[in-house]
Length: 155
Ligand SMILES: [Zn+2]
Ligand SMILES: [Zn+2]
Ligand SMILES: [Zn+2]
Picture 1: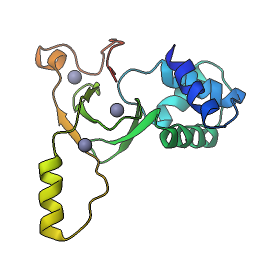
Picture 2 (picture 1 turned 90 degrees about the horizontal axis):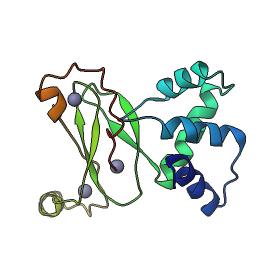
Picture 3 (picture 1 turned 90 degrees about the vertical axis):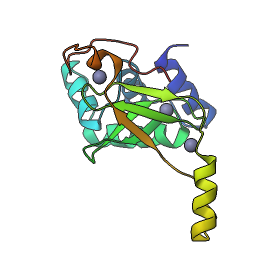
C-alpha cells in the first residue's frame, strides 16, 4: 500500500470520511521524506496549485496524529515538526543538519522510567523522546539540506 493509501486507510478504519482535502493532505505527507512542518505542506500545496488552506492542513495533521499515522516531534531548535510513522511505540533520531529522521526500533528506557517513578512517586503513563545528531550522509560530508534521498523516513 502506498503512503497515501495507508493514511487514508487509517481514516476509514476510524470511521472518518476521506474527503478531498484529507486525500490531498495525505498525498502531500506521503511525498515528504524526513520531517516536515505544516508550513512545508502549505508550500507544497501552493506549488501544486492545490486549494488547501492552512487551517485544513492543521486540522488534517491533527487527525492523522490522533490516528497514529503521523507523529509530532520536537526539533533541537524547540520547534515542532511532523513525521509519517506507524502507531507502535518507538522513538526517532533526527539529523540536526539535514532534517533526516529515522525510527529507532524498540524502547530501551524502561529502567529510566521505573527509576523516575520511584524517585518522584509518579505513576508514569507515557513519554516522548527524540535523539539529535548528525546522520551518516552529513558526517560523510554530503551537502546539508540538499538531500534528495527518499529513504529519510524508514518508519
Ligand atoms: Zn515514528
Ligand atoms: Zn543529515
Ligand atoms: Zn519509549
